[in-house]
Image (cartoon, rainbow, N blue to C red; front, side, top):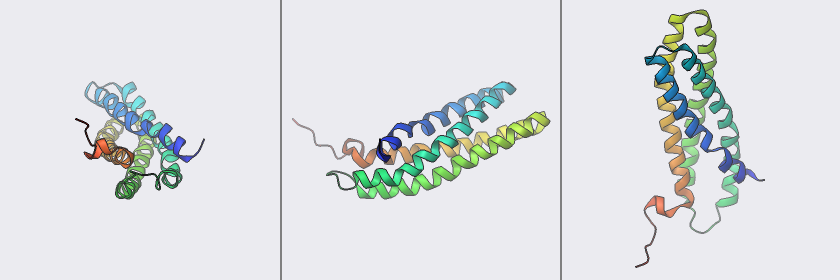
Length: 152
């Protein structure tokens, strides 16, 4: 298994995990279910942890694919830049989730405040992750870039 395998194996976890975390958090916040809010915090923490191997395998994955015909170097660079932003936002979401778990255990009022903060931050984080993933797909897939030729 090389860096490309690791990158492709784990890159779906941040995308899917963050959206599931957001959905569960929204139900927990608007349905006033503390257990759902706490569950979403754990999901955000897991997402942050899985983002690390995705991020750190990216450079090795680039080395493997950069000389393959049809690979877009422009999208590699954009994907890398967006990956930096996504990493920091995802880690921040994970860290604030840890704080929310502690604060929410001590005070219901603080717990709801952190839930609202995480809803906004989680949405921003998910958006950047989704955009990053989209650019990652464009590296090898000309059909996503709108460049695919059609046989008639």
